[in-house]
Image (cartoon, rainbow, N blue to C red; front, side):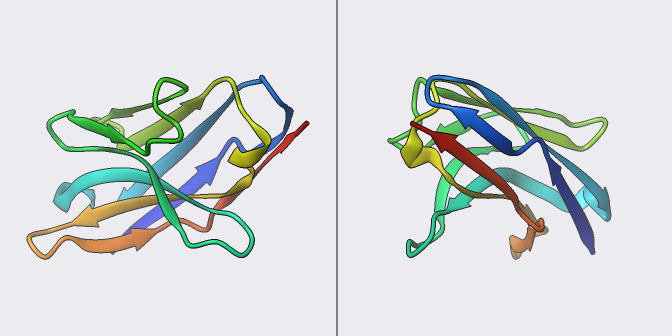
Length: 117
């Protein structure tokens, strides 16, 4: 079992920045990829950014060059630095890890990000 706790969401004006944090605990030794997803009202959950155990990153097209994902393996933290925020970035952001050979999904409870125009 892996427990994920997100923090750092809130309300920000367009053009502003926020930094999301996610702390993993439990059976963290089996974690492969750590990622951030988001889900806006009436829309499907989508990948925002991911980072592998080796540090390789990938980003959703809509956030490239604005968001940066990073992690601390030793402390099992992952962060999402979000710059130049837009109203369309408004969503609940979820921390996700893929665990073990079967890449089982664990999810955090989500943190709300609201960007006002």
